[in-house]
Image 1 (cartoon, rainbow, N blue to C red):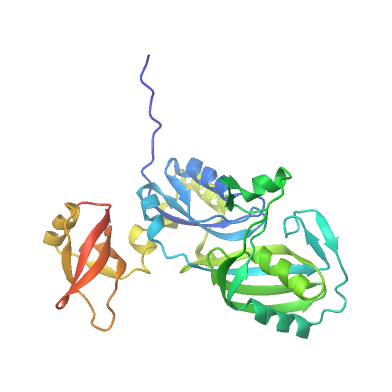
Image 2 (image 1 turned 30 degrees about the horizontal axis):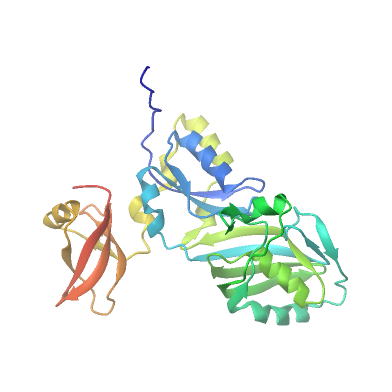
Length: 313
């Protein structure tokens, strides 16, 4: 039996901010980037509904190992709702299952109703979602006609703003914790208003500190690759830029050697801000060499243990 040949890998590594088009799943985006970049090591940092557009951070190469250390616990959406009907999917792609008059809803009523959705709330996710129920995706069960319920769970809506209202449609902007579903907010809001509602547009503008304004579309990426005859590396964020939201420490040559061997090091810290938890470890060129865990103070030093070492220098 002959030896199985290994597929060539480009060695490209970094974080790619994609502005996703509607009609694509997050997996579709990963597959396309994998083909464009010529690397098998591609992953996304959290799904975005197929009908939704906007920011989808994609990790490539050894930076896929950094995904768990990115601070992505806050997301911002701009979206549109339509009053008067509820759908199977809570968005415009589903079948209408209930209708009701919304002529009584005024801007003032809508503004007042939004108060109940600000701050910590309990939310029941849509049945058409990627949540697992007994090992299967909820959307798979829903499409198969299986009857099931998803229990409500705690989320936090940090801000919810009404941008415009032209009945029966309204434009809103929401800043929320990860795991918050825009479609659920709209579904429940419609019922609170004595009617029904579903989303007609969802656009994610921010994930953590990453902005959609800095993202590229897959079409732009493909065009640039064709023009330049290679994958455009300037669209990638470096590993250090990826984890810029973490406290960072620049290590000496001796400390780098210890970290590369799995040993802890003592580093200086600002007395006014003692970081505990994950920290970024940099070399003298400000390149990321690993992720550490700040565990303990020892006099005027902070004890940092290596969690992931990416480059031994």
